[in-house]
Image (cartoon, rainbow, N blue to C red; front, top):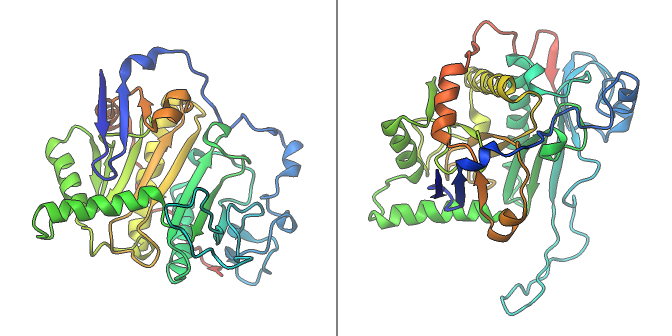
Length: 364
């Protein structure tokens, strides 16, 4: 198979070339890091007992009575020591951003958090429990809700890089939350396509997101599972091979439920589905690198379109063609991946698990 595919939600184009799947590839793994022993992990700044190696925490799930920035935690959120954005603008933003300027600049102001997902030295999400994954999602919710009230921010990116091949610089389980004062190009394209889809149909309220998901459900060939108002689907124009998306059903653009308003039961369901897929991919790919991305609407406009959570395995690197064309080459058809996941996945239960916030612990 060799064909161009266009993502219906963004307009991004990919090249599906399944014949390239047989080429020799070295898979980046979580063991590609500079330490992999108890002795060298003494340098891990995210370990419990190393709280002095991070900035002061912004949020933590702590044992009641424990001190801030001390031991006695299950998860911490701290400012990134090497942020991609500035916390405050050092000078007024330039007013002239007209197209006749060759060099356009604007100070990148925002919030850059690191979510330290466990107190020990684990480096793989597959080694976490459903409850621990749910705690990670809950921390994302709590920080997203706070940031959503900050009207100086426009975009919010929540992502997790596991393995050196996926861009992680430290092996300890962690994710990142990055809010900033620009509307991302891809976010603008999503909003534009939503508006164009509605206007092309007479402004009748027909929703692009609903149209896409309903079409996937009718066809059935890329739907892996539906459970408790969550659909698991391999996107038609996957960005990478074996991409898997988790998204809400029965929602629409214009009145979508914010991610940070998901109930505890919904978070546990999402965590169980996510971990089930990660375990299946790990059995197939071994210690694979991957990105986990949470797509959200503009800050303060959470109703604009529903959230989407994507697992993007990094079994190959972007190279010259991708950089020149801005189109990724994907070597495994999503229809094939969906069929394989449907057959091979042992789905974990979201019930009868430990509580997200155990007795004697608290978020603060």
